Length: 220
Ligand code: MD3
Ligand code: FE
Image (cartoon, rainbow, N blue to C red; front, side, top):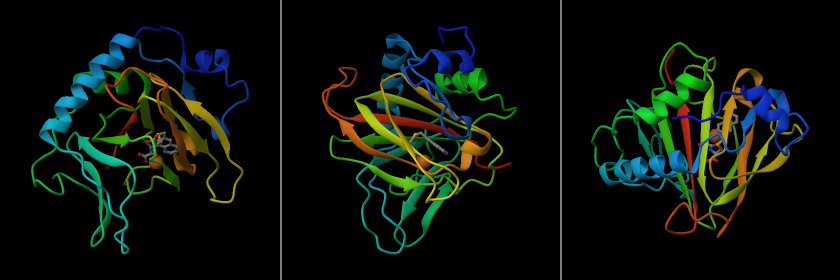
């Protein structure tokens, strides 16, 4: 169950982040209760059991990324040296279909995304204490009209978001466990990244680290 009945806009205004985010990206601090977060962690454990975390490799160079990943839903985002960034229905190492998306996530999308079709992919990112994610755009989807919905679990991170051009000024803030971000409209194409993890800032997980879930629509 999602606990609050206030609108996203109202919650963004009462948040510690008093200035608006670039392009009206919406941030809902503490969107999820502790119980909801625990339920999601348990669901993610089951997903990882069925679809083990893999180490994504940069296209062409094959350089490993520091974040480990898996997916649930009909499609998953993967990247390998040879084939680069893409969405596919199978795990890149086991060849199995991705696990179903838990109802908890489908309900969150229904409640917040304001989009008529369900999400097709949920990318699960695992950050160890030293992991980060460089500034990038999410542009491997064939649908930029649908929003991206992101949920943070575990340790706090320093998140950075800019504009539609790499050189645009960026704004940094901390995402904590239970926060939700909704990237709609212009913010959907904003450059963004994770500069650092603050280990020991949450007891939700059994070890240091952060999980980020991103729900996406891939096809029109
Ligand atoms: C802004 N994940 O998986 S989530 C990613 O915390 C990714 O793991 C980060 O960037 C993480 O691609 C950031 C917040 C987020 C997600 C998607 C966005 C911000 C976004 C898409 C467009 C703009
Ligand atoms: Fe991204």
